[in-house]
Each structure stands twice: as C-alpha cells, then as structure tokens.
Length: 150
Image (cartoon, rainbow, N blue to C red):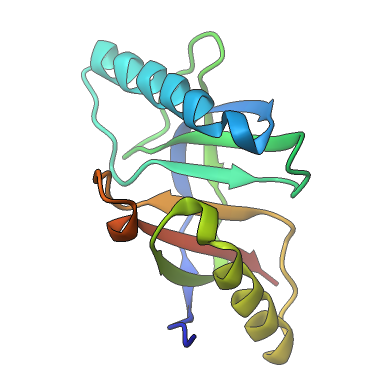
C-alpha cells in the first residue's frame, strides 16, 4: 500500500493532558476517561480545544504503554489534579493519515519509519496519534500519525 508521508516544521503547541500508563487493550476506557475529564475541565475554564484529541506514545511496550492523552489548546492553561499543561514541541515532524481501524495502524508506522530512515532523519522516540474523527464505522476512522524528527 502507498502512503502519503509529509514533512513540515511545527510551532510549539500548548496542550492540556494526562500522563498515564496502560496496556493496549485498556486504551478505549483510558482514552474515554482522560478525554472526558479534560473536556469537563476545559468547560470549567470556559475554554475549548484548538485541535483534535491526541495521544503521545513514549514507548511501544503494548502491555505497559507510557502515554500522554490530551487536547491542543490556544494558550498555556493551568492544570488541575492529573490534568497538566504541557506542549507538543516545535520542530520537524513527519506525518501520515491512516484510514481504518486503530488496530490496523501498524503498517503506517512501518512505512513512516522506513521513510524517516531513507531520508536521513532520526525519530525523537515519541509518536503522536491525532484522532481526526469519531465515527461508528471503523473503516472510516481517520488517524494522523506524527513522528517528531531530528
């Protein structure tokens, strides 16, 4: 399969997020709870997300994923309890859209890693997934996978 892999320079993006650990099988519940808590808190602040919900993966241990789950925001906002201000760092990013079930995203990761290596870049070790839609039909799900690179 052919993928449209793009590179661009990204400005630093403030976010509100929750950092946690979870097994891949628990992600639907963990994401639901985290996104719900952050949206509720944004409502309390009178703020809205400035972009799609995301998850940052700091490792790829499917039984013990180190995750940051959150929303981009327009400015740095105060945290509350587990919800912390953070940022997606500025720099070069490689991006590709995956269409289909989340469980079938691995080929996109593999294609992107090949592209990064073939083009002389080094991944920073973090992978982001931005969830562009929330539809009942899994085949229509859109996920933007992003690797910051050096």
